Image (cartoon, rainbow, N blue to C red):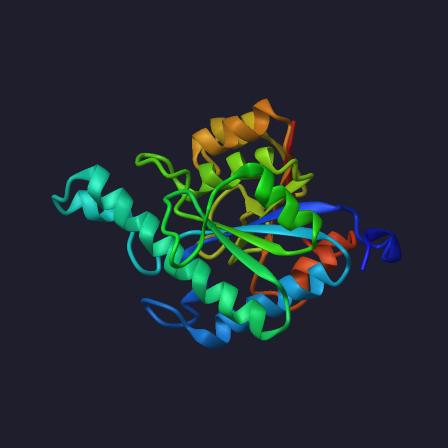
Length: 243
């Protein structure tokens, strides 16, 4: 199905970044299969618009490198453990998507041929052209870089038109809307403002990389049913981070 069939879709190729915590549901740890399935349905609904999708999923629901290093573990080792956690999440999402009939490839920055493909840019682009969902795992393959930075890097390499950051709130606020009733949501905000005000959209290196390559970041609520598809059609509530 081509994008031309659905003129409603504003983008042809996008990257969806979600945290590992988004897969936990109401649990305090690990994977919640019904939640993984719900997100897979969201991705499928957008893929059915003819949009080419790649994904980056964090690993914080299983292991967070920064937290490990805070407890005395060597930072590099802790970060590699976090990268392996993202591979587990990617495989879970692949399973859920393929259960819906969506062809999916897990592509890891750390080669592990028995479970997924190694990252080769041209091959990944070809998968996208064939309307396969590509899930990029193991971050950038380097310690000290977050999955936010990995998402921005892959979005640039894949020539995505925008990065969609699925969160628990419907955009970027000037302060935590769960703690402050008077928190105000931005419709649009600049990269520099995000950095200066420390708005917590993504970490600083990810924001700088997006800014340097003029890659818009759209922050929306992943908890809103149909939200991802709606925003791609130009509806719904979200914040756009741009130049």
